[in-house]
Length: 109
Image 1 (cartoon, rainbow, N blue to C red):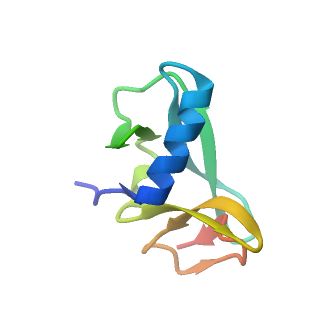
Image 2 (tube, rainbow, N blue to C red):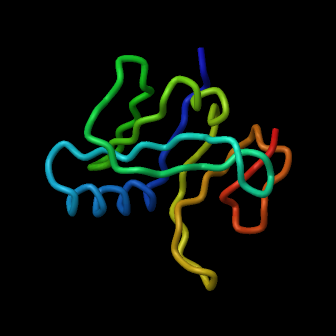
Image 3 (cartoon, rainbow, N blue to C red):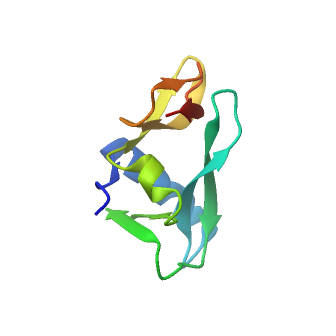
């Protein structure tokens, strides 16, 4: 069993805003791909199709999908939304990452 992926209150609020602007049936998909300056990178997409083996995380008006291949890389992670001097973005606080790049969009394990 994979440890849960959680969504912070700030992230849920921002995801809900994004999904409302996309219209009915929209969900946020988070996946992990090879690449980035640290080996793996997070990818965020709006999706309308849920696969049978997707991990579905719901909080408030936010619906987040994680594919089965990405779920082990994200196990125990929290998705947060930050708005600071370098800009506004989603940030994945991933306990599996042994290193990450300065902007937090790529990581290694």
